[in-house]
Image 1: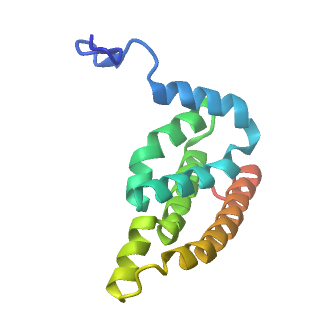
Image 2: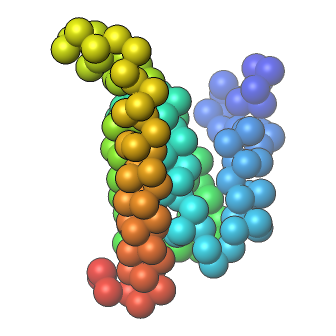
Length: 144
């Protein structure tokens, strides 16, 4: 067994991983509103990493383990994953690295702060709308 609690022989975790601990805590904390939170988790991940794909890599396992802890079915897991990905995609417009590259390519260094303020508001609004849609879809079961 290694220090992470992973048993190499059985290929299973003998103790809970940090992701599982966070997922359990999130499931208990957010319960019925988790669908409304997951988009903002994606927004955070996209801001940190700068891409939707990296957001999914960073938070995908956590989001799905949290949803499983809430006893969601396969369709709900897919919707949770989509909410996470949408938030991560929206964060691309507020990613500091991408804004610096864009400003440099059009020879407007120093303009990033003006852009990020405006883009951040729109990213929050769109994430709120998408989170509301995720909640509606999860509650009504529109998607089967």
